[in-house]
Length: 459
Image (cartoon, rainbow, N blue to C red; front, top):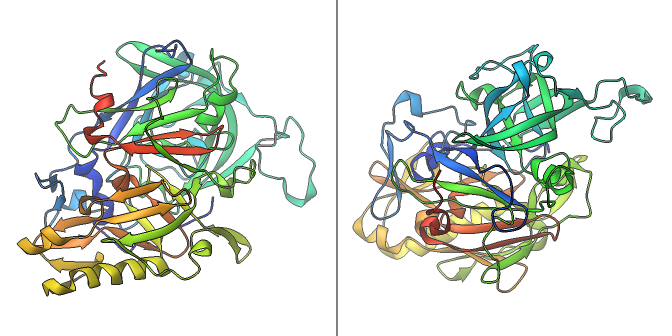
């Protein structure tokens, strides 16, 4: 999916470092059903040392120090805050190593650096060595998962199965597809899945700013082949095929607070939840539709509907300049909300109008498009924003804590303006349970304060 965000903020990617505690995901149990069916959970464990300049106050707002340390101020296209990571063991035998992969719900490729690497980025431990793993197999060169060959060459089984993966942040990874065994481990127990398709990356651009010297690549959780949820949905080695996954992102808590990425039957019931349809499910092979696109039909600020002309087209996928672009998608791997420019400008104007009676002066800051000088009145009158989906009952209500951040003596709108796409990011999904049913094509959600359903899971 070739989409790049036009993010102008230097600090915005840090917003969720305190709010969400960048996390590692490890498995619970041996992958056998927890409730008599096919399901397992991957634990989201808070990482330490990321929030020295950021904290969540008792008011529930994210507060950023006015002068963050250099180590916590990344380039503008880096996403440190809010990045959830999956800890997984790759390979078998002497090649078996444990790596940390960034979670990405907009792509369907699981890729990581493999030796030999032509353009390496820093990671820990060193890149995977396929030659040392007995379970490593190349995907046949004539597989439908491979990139089409150049110059009309008819691929054979012996040809390398090349791939190329683009990230929302401009990452470009290239290499060869293979099959390998992955194990999600915790406390001596494992949930092992054989035959997972991984992209062995030998050259990449853009990810060195996102790896933080640790991440080895990306785990794509998009809905299409060959993502992890797709693999679990057709895998012959699991007792029951898995078509659903779920998570609840907690707002804040103690350093040992954790949550889970759940699969299959290890998911709460959805009867009390509202749901919206996943769009473009008929596009089963185009990687331009791997993300979980939905129909956003309205946006209101403080109870007033935004006047968005041609809103039906504004948030739809369409072809522009020979490629697919646009649309509105959910992604817990994107730190904060991204909004297509025409809608963003309307949102910005509506916030200004809502706060106009207070007479609060705006403040110019390089890293944000809209900021105000903080007053006691301002805190009390920040607007709630509601996102309306195609189904009348499907509304996502965003309190001010999910849209604004405090920076020094100012408070700023934490929404990134985009040239082509709208993304409902992790910050907007906090304290809500989400269930993705890939087979039935629906996303369910409901408030879950503190993500209490996961609080009792201990390892």
